[in-house]
Length: 478
Image (cartoon, rainbow, N blue to C red; front, side, top):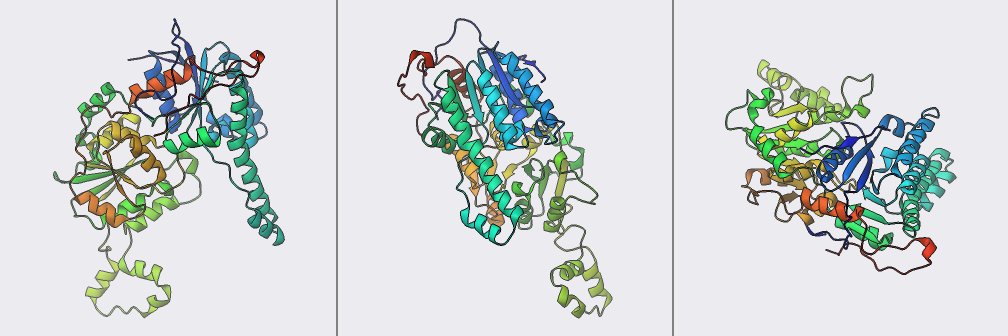
């Protein structure tokens, strides 16, 4: 077990050039979101764990209560927390910033200001872009229409969105290029599309790409050895031959869990859907009896509704025309809906990391039916792949990009196509189970971070030396 300190306040071969390894173990600071419910925080903790034999690692978790607050009394406290961290960064050899824009602030001005403070304080800097925004074009027609219709708030929002995008995309890129004239700056991305944007759209010199990686061989062996259906009492009443289909993550519309429920309608009765995840704490609001997304999943599963209620809800004008002429028809219309899946859909709840991974292992298939929302990466699918699960994923840019690194590992279906998903689930596994870790794993990821944060053999000279043309050492195109 590696140990690391926590402070409060491409190809498998490294793809960005060669590093000059120092004679001593260098100190690396990792600045990342804090909190148990944040995927980036989980990744930063795993990364620190695996990097500790290459660097003397210190993790600086950012308090998300402070960082995300837009209250005028809290924002200065968040600024002070960032400045406290920056004062310590000068004592490190290199700094890695795990950048997801919202983890640095609620306003674009806060995000940009705090990013610049961290970037300026770092002796050598690497930025891991969990999202790499592209510059957006200003919606002139929409702005003019809103202004002409006296929709001042709508016009203001369009303008504000454009300014936010511009500052966090082109503005951050411009600042990094400026810093690169006087110190080593590297960018790390999680897919080839972001790699090309970083190199060719933003002109970054040192760019490295690698998919998210969490689990080492020992971690995988430990999960496999301990994972059992008997560890989940909620499944005790399931028949021995039940086929378990799992979906994973906080309950959110973009996860597409409704697609999995619609597929379940077309699967044999011994197929059961396990939903590992709960409502995100930020979505807990009142007073309301049930979260709207959970209600939408109930509706997909025909849970707690009768045929008459369903008919009345969908054809209100026709409902008075339904005449109940016999007790038999009364029972059929007012009883349990014949398509009710409540006995085959199981909400497993928001679990800890160990239980979450064990849940993946007990499933016959791990399904990721996400909608397209422009994500750069996904932690759960990376963990499922490392565990050797059968993976079936929607054809989003995120998962297609992930599949470029992991060939013959993911079965795809079109977004929202529940019939295709159902067909895949009843068809034998397309790819055989993998033995050992995938080709891109925690060790190749460690090599990327070692390369990005060690002194590069070729890097821009300090400004005092005068203008020097340097050759790009960015990652090789796929």
